[in-house]
Length: 165
Image 1 (cartoon, helix red, strand yellow):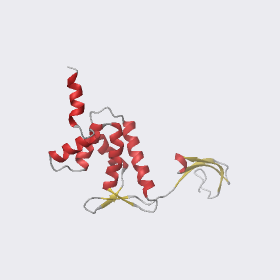
Image 2: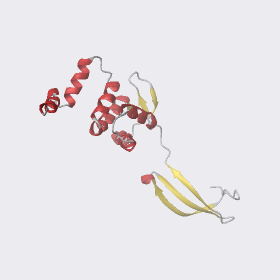
Image 3: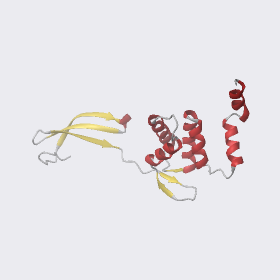
Image 4: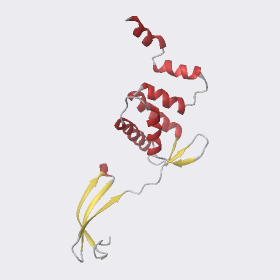
């Protein structure tokens, strides 16, 4: 590692500390020529994760793109950005845990991970995301999903609200 002050090529490591849950290492170094101390960071260079789309196309996984989709489904809902970021993080973790040797994941799997996260946070955001992701073909499909979400009794929740008058 070249010294940023004198450009000498030899330096020694004075201190090392793991960062970001162990995926990055911070090193304090000292130039063997001039004694200048500087910091370097090492990260694991990973192969890019490819998303296999419904039509067979492949594109690089983007957490930002995923977050934008979640933000759209949570628009005007009481879901914080922290909760949305947590869903993205959980989705990334689920992708990484599913098959360590594979560098591809289907968009279907990603959608399922996101829907599982949204279902626990906000049912309306979940339905919004599902309606785009699953591309409901008609109202019957959409209604069936609503019934499933409501526990197969769509009138149970609405009747209880009207009984109190």
